[in-house]
Length: 126
Image 1 (cartoon, helix red, strand yellow):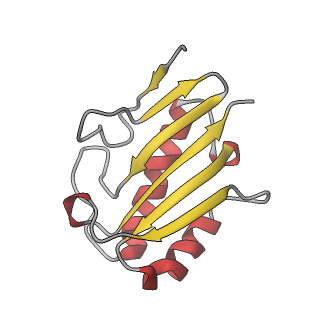
Image 2 (tube, rainbow, N blue to C red; image 1 turned 120 degrees about the horizontal axis):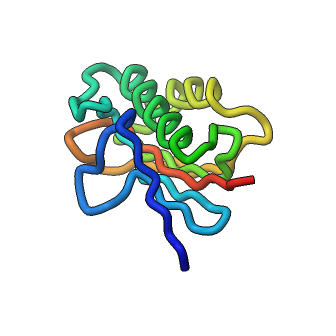
Image 3 (cartoon, one colour; image 1 turned 30 degrees about the vertical axis):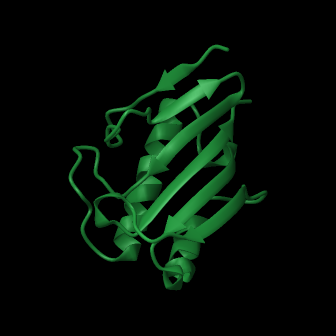
């Protein structure tokens, strides 16, 4: 199996032993994006600010793979508080158009660096 690392300086570097994204065949698996800026600094603020930063990071990683949000077929959203779901859903809807990707959204006890949201996904290369 051939794996190609997708990496961009326009999104935060991995904070552990993983890649921003991996392409294998026609699939790109992108790691969970959290609200870090490209320089690695934490995006302070409420769930709106954090979600916008996560979606920006996702856009940059997809762009580095030659893709955009229309190529995404599956996402998983991790929230520390499901009460934030409506806000996240509205911002998410600004990036994705029909046919929307399959999606799961779960509440978790905690996320890295004390943040409130993380989104990971899978995209298909045409």
